[in-house]
Amino acid sequence: MVEGDLADLTLPTLLQALMKEHSTAMLRLHHGTEQGALYFCEGALVHAARGEVVGDEAVLELLGWSDGRFRIVRDANQQPRTITQCVA
Image: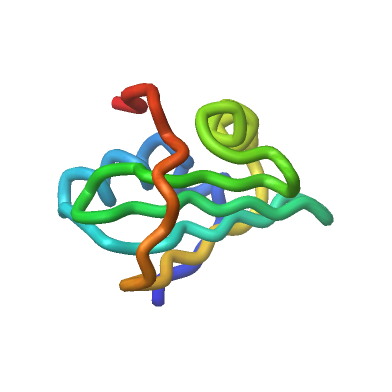
């Protein structure tokens, strides 16, 4: 498990690293009282959730978070594929 502050390691940087490393992991995000999560399978972003919002719309909302905390957890649980757009 890796965790840190989004002010020190930005969300786009984290996304690139997880994709480049072909990670299967969950990237949990906290922004004040809000939470979100991005799920990767072998480096591909397959699912995103922020409250009731999922998929591409959730990714766009989460990318707007420039501060807060993150935690990367290796995650072998298969997630639904809700991402239809390329994030790279």
